[in-house]
Length: 400
Image 1 (cartoon, rainbow, N blue to C red):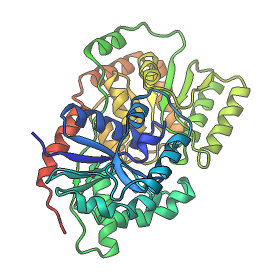
Image 2: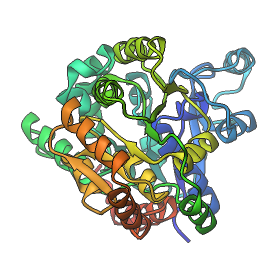
Image 3: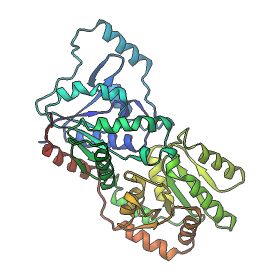
Image 4: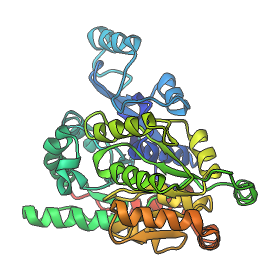
């Protein structure tokens, strides 16, 4: 039996967003719960303590409701209840955490400065390894495409990660980036960084067969699943699509993903312009997982125009459904593409992207070959990822 662990869901348990970090945190909770090893926890800012999640928070994690904002939201009842307990409750509160010896602490979230200041009691409480998951350093590499608040906060976050016993990076690219940054800072006692690539939601055999045997749509659908933000490079996809529509190409472009109010504004504006011009462009915004699954089944192929990723889940999710994906041939995206079923572009710019899309729209033989390659690719599930995590955690030594 694996050692017990604390899983911090301070943000994920209080948001309906379904971006990459929240998806990872939710899948880990599901898999750890199946194995009976996890206590999901949160810092309650109103009661002023770390505690186990309450039933209403567990229910929110299981909800299929999808919000349009990443921010956390606490119901007014939870706020006032926490404040009341803080005032009249005994100290120490019986609601404070009490854990078994050897319990590990896992931080899967991009935590705030306030949460970082509150880590100290958890570090003292957990007798086992204290580990954080690291996604990427895109805020440092592409500050112009990242919200200003994230850019300002990020250097401190990377230094706060050095307080953990070890870091589980979601890809080799992310591992190398973090290790290089710490070396540049001159940190001589930085924790080890291990690359543990993420898993994905694998469709069932029946779902894969139904997708493969589904009749082709009269008008092919090109799908893009990712948050509308600067680095995801939707403007390039929109320009490539407009070039094809202007040449008479028949296809519908379908976009799914929450819009970032700061860095996604230009893409939203261009979407509106193209829709007003009568182009076959559908933007669904943030949707439930079941809608995303159906969209994968119904599309001809996908495009993931992102400039840089820590992992790039939608590339492998597309492949899992036997749908070819056009993406960049760089970093972790290039690694995913080289496994088969993808078209990898050296330059993710409008002209080469339009050429690749036009080829897959017109050459059914090439599309079928790529789809066949996608269907036979071995892919890692969330269960596999959790097994990797549980196998690695006992090898991590406490540093202090």
